[in-house]
Image 1 (spheres, rainbow, N blue to C red):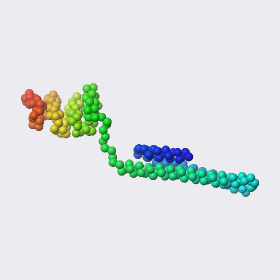
Image 2 (image 1 turned 45 degrees about the vertical axis):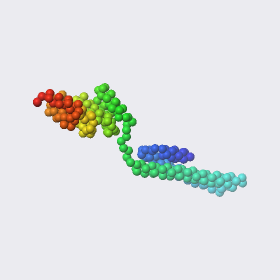
Image 3 (image 1 turned 90 degrees about the vertical axis):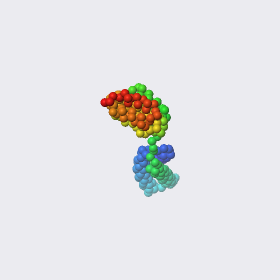
Length: 246
């Protein structure tokens, strides 16, 4: 009876959402259940043989006038019948579990691999979380929020703003080359975004601060050529006039 209850519990588990680990564990459990079942059957057969030998010996010695021998034989037959029914139930349950397990494994192999899913936050929530960490000086943590926004909501208006802030976070850490690269990605990935001209101007300002005047001149020049009607273009023109020749 204990094995039947275990088998029923297995069916309940498989009726839900079973992981590959669950299925692997269940297969191992079924293996040991079958091993245990084999040992139980062997023990039953041994006990039945002993009982039959005992009855045969009793019958050879005496025949009880009150029918005790007949009662023993009937009890033995009932015992064998009940054991057979119990074993049949257990084996039937195990077979149903194994069939269900096979179906789940086939379905699992046929299912497409899950794609990237949202972490449960909106673009504004990611952006605000990143800005909060920026203000706290936790720049690497801020980048995690901004980068997640870019990955999950690449076509959202906040994505270019998040990429801009990634560049800003590198600048505040003194990682100049990473800052340039991150700001240039704003222009590459979102060339029509209002942040594109702003990213070029910020990169030019960083280069100017680092006294990389040739690099600053290149960034300011790109603004004039690619975004001539922007406020950044007007400011870039002013900065170009003030840059030293060398």
